[in-house]
Length: 114
Length: 113
Image (cartoon, rainbow over all chains, first blue to last red; front, side):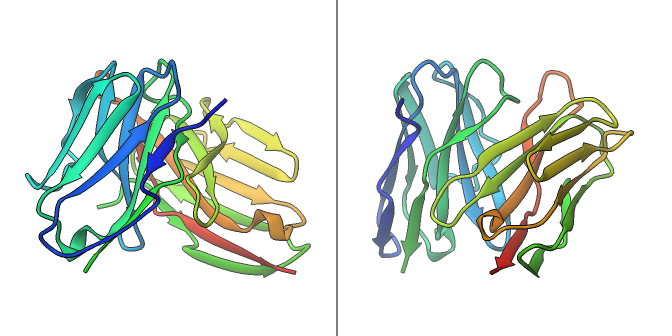
């Protein structure tokens, strides 16, 4: 079975540009999470969805970040405008039924903002 | 403020040695998970512990949940190069109606052949 699929794997962009990260969760999973990982702050939860509905976005750093889940098989995380401090690895994860169950992570999208 | 502190932050040991890494908090968790993350990949679940005092074994890895459910340890016996990676603990706080996983700061383990 296919795992969580993220794209792009790597993105290098200039400050001020819009960045869109994409995620396809595992089919049948009810929860989808967006995390950001940096050396300084570790793995931080940005936002999570349950059945395509955003439940908790308290981890989203600021209004420049937005996330959508238009259907059960697709989610996007958008940064507009991007800043150098947004450079990180962004992970999408999904889980089945329970918010506190096993998380299945994608391979991540490494973002570098120059 | 980090809810889950892991120690040590970095650990580098020779193949064949034993090691223990720790995950500590002042909060009580209803459950705790351990993940391992290899370079260029996402974290992968190793184990979930739920009951205070619980011990689980996964081959050479032994996981223990503290009696008070505030801490956990991971012990590796006869470490192998394949054990190299970032070890993350993740806990669910006892906060009914708003449960979510909180990840620890991580221990970066390197096993030297």
